[in-house]
Amino acid sequence: MIDNPNDPSLRSFIDVSPDSPFPIQNLPFGVFRRDKNSYPHIGIAIGDEILDVSELTEAAPQFLKWPAFLQLNLWHDLSNILGITPTFWREIRQQVSQLLRYDNPALRDNPKLRQRVLTRRSDVRMLMPCHIPNYTDFYSSREHATNVGIMLRGKDNALMPNWVHLPVAYHGRASSIVVSGTDIRRPHGQTKADDADLPTFGPTKSLDFELEIGTLIGTPNDLGTPIPTSQAAEHVFGMVLVNDWSARDIQKWEYQPLGPFLAKNFATSISPWVVTLDALEPFRVAGPKQDPEPLPYLRCEGNWSYDIQLEVWLQTAKMTEPVRISATNAKHLYWNICQQIAHHTINGCNLQTGDLLASGTISGPTPDSLGSMLELAWKGTRPIQLPNGETRVFLQDGDRVTMTGYCQGPGYRVGFGEVTARVLPAVEFGN
Ligand code: MN
Image (tube, rainbow, N blue to C red):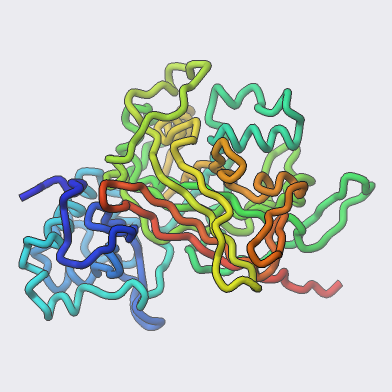
């Protein structure tokens, strides 16, 4: 028996196509509802199906060994599972891997149990995976920070002097984080044109997406107790895709001197399946060389960047299918998650179970690998040409943005699925 759930030769008795994001090597956690009247259940994705973990625990408790204290309040989201320890997450993933493998008859040859604990992914509605108490958004892509810097300040001062010394971030808003599939309403706000004396009020004209990955914190740290880089990964449960919606015109007028506010806090979308750090382990790679060398508390041993291929797809209301407008990779990120966590907690700040730490917009080195429309259309000067003749500099009402991400293994993919949402027109205000 192979005991390593990441072994490339592992196969499940459930058919999984080579381009599915959810082979037996992945086993991401999510929360779903079978219909409007049923309770949320915890599930693990496998191919086109979901192993209903809540149902399995009730129907056949011998298969998954939960700690006794979890019991009743386990079922509504992942928060309780996240808050325990990595040893426990590993054991559950190991047990599920054993149960789903092709050579284990326990579930494979029990049609009645299969009927009860396996359900089609297309038949359910995905919910938020856990309560997210806090949201921090980093700014860790050097290419993105440089591009935005060039647009704002010119080539010579593109990167602020602090940027190469610390992972810059701001505290975002957790209450407006929504799960994939939730439509996004175009926000109103104040803007001021460069040649105008006074600001005006109205729907944003510069609605944008930001392609990011997000880290969900599992084990918390105590207030006053920093997490060193060497232990940071043990505090991470897993990762999701993030679309951090932005209103560039509102941002430009409001952001000084305290940073992003209403241009950012109206919505942030996340993908529903949480890919565990354990499943991503085989895809760790070296990050970009850091020069100057970071201060000692930010140095870290080993490779902590992740080789995750990322794509952005756009479908306007007039298009019959989406078109890919960007392709990049998470490995381009300059600051890694261990450095982000060490920096976030170096002053004693306490991370809580379920906290979302997003990477910041991920842009690559080429014009087709940029993670926002601001950059793809270069502040409106290079409109994106779509196959049906339409063009875009920012998002229009009815546009659908879909982001995907996956790690390519030999013959299989450890993927995230997608985060997708459509832009709805602004609400009408009576004046
Ligand atoms: Mn962002």
